[in-house]
Image (tube, rainbow, N blue to C red; front, side, top):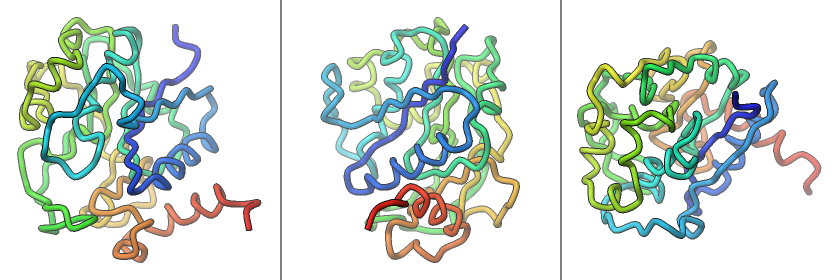
Length: 225
């Protein structure tokens, strides 16, 4: 039985503050020891990013999570542009050993053609399913997710979990990946995802639900001039 929760977090230097704010939000709410692993490109010695598309530096490396966990136990992957509003142990408690992954199964069309840093924001099947993943790292179906395998797969294959049959993709409550701006304001959201742009970018500093992010940022910066 795992005595701590492993959280793999997307890291992109262009919005490094988002990573730290997300970790702060998890730490201050958690009742269980947390182990963070940032998906910083320069730290991934076994993996070389060869894909040329994508809006952030961890768009493909997130699928390394089972490999990084030595295909043992469970782990959470989360995009860095998020804020956790409750004890992440509640998410951890939703683990289902019969599933290879568990995700929020969004079914929506985006309101915006562009997102942060001018990146194109397209609609596609299973959009944002892979932005929060509860991984069963030990599941046999995930053992093919080696660095070499991931390097050779297109984004459409990976982000749609095409190596799995649908019955192995468990469903999480939508409150665990609530899309700010795309969805209405929700005070009951357990994890807010600023998918169009983290409030650290001036274009998104005043957008829907941004005040939740700013409050965590202020708490994380306390004690500094």
